[in-house]
Amino acid sequence: MATAAGPHPVNRWTWTMACGVILLLAGIFCLAAPGFTTAAIAVLIGWILLFTGIAGVVMGFRSHGSEKRWNEILYGLGSIIVGLLVIVDPAAGAATLALFVAIWLFWRGMVSFGAGRVAGPGPVRGMLLGIGVVDWLLALLLVLSWPFPAVQMLGVFVGLSLVLGGGVTILAAWQLRGSVAA
Image (cartoon, rainbow, N blue to C red):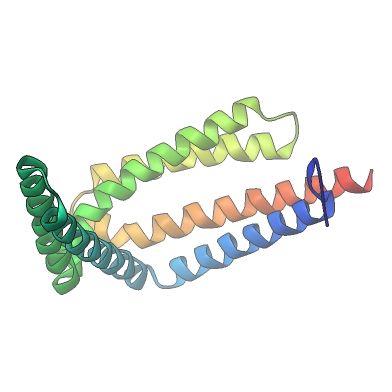
């Protein structure tokens, strides 16, 4: 049920709770199988690069400007080559991926910390600030342990980040639920 002001408050907290549970379960799965998680992320990114590379080559051949055409074709071919290399050898791709995940964790830490600074008083604020700091520490550990231990830790760190994110989302849903009941 929706109103002109947006979704009904009950729907808001239930959807928030569902997202939190999904994040928490995904994090637990990542922690239970960190090697699989790292390989799966690398292979997924390989396939994304492969398909975007194919699209780039197709767009390049359809392009009318010669400079733009060759840029798109060369970019597409590069993406295809890197995508295939990662699909064929996920371990090598995972080493590079570890650096990208470190950047993602740093960014996520900034966003969580920023959200915690502006959040109202309560446990969600503390959790957001804490998650921001933990994500920064995880990013730092990945960078300092790169390349080999970082690859092993990648699945664990992604799992930890998802578990913490799921926990704070569930807590936020409970707070939303409390505000609906009040």
